[in-house]
Length: 441
Image (cartoon, rainbow, N blue to C red):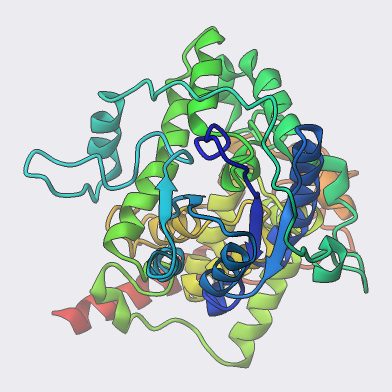
């Protein structure tokens, strides 16, 4: 925005840099979103007399080349906090006049500090401190036009990047749920205003559309949290719970600022000795979980929804993650990697913090012995219709039977039995935890 307000011409650029993040390059679902988001952005820019230049390669190399071609004096960017993008910013700054802006969080990560000047590790006091600085500054208005250069630099063609799946096109279901881009993001915010006051109740009910569906739009910068905060001031009812979820994104960035390797390393070192299951049986169980074939209807529904839409209901994400970690005793990093590849809203900070919270390995996390009971959760949060939608083999079952068809002897022949019983899984998980604790002592 500040670049567009300058006196000179502006060249909007997006660099697809898969070299800098290495194994943390965008997953397949995120790349689908990126394709459509870039197409939408280019259309919006052309309406303002501009266009989007696309390049592929290392950020610092490509930006230096463009600057040399067109004589640019400044490079403006939105600051990111993933460790590889912080490295990229330093690399660009060594070669060009780089001006970084904050805008994708309620407050610049690292700016909300404790009384002694340190960074928060625990969410609740972080949220209390952040609220004292709210509301965030009002977002700037979009420019009506953007000054174009006399000559545009060469641009890649978006289609040549092959961001969309083709053989097969596993993203067909994405189109029914998602329309990437700023306009749709703003429409979703407007739609959610009337629902926000009831969010605290509906967010836990998978069979209801109580979610805002804003997470991928936020991740890709199509809408800012400041814009959402100010628009929701128009909402009636208690919106604190939803605002606290927006604040969780800020908290996650604060965590990865302190622990850049949070997506790969246990924050609690005692878990480095935990005996996760490995080998062929564990690999088969991981695959069954990924494909929604565990015999637990709520887990299977969530995993199938994820594959079909690139998204999963928040309550079900916790259930599915807990099941992988504690029922199947599979390393949380396997699940984090799967979500990284399959979520359209895959975010390094939020994804790694959420997985370590469920696993009990995080700086602020659930205790490992607190093992979520998926069958009880399914009934408690009235997931019957959700299961019918995503596990059609069970669609004919009544509300009482559908959560645990094995228990009432009504499992259809086409639906697999439980991969492991709940009591057996719980006992195995607690035994593994006791071994770890004994080793630590």
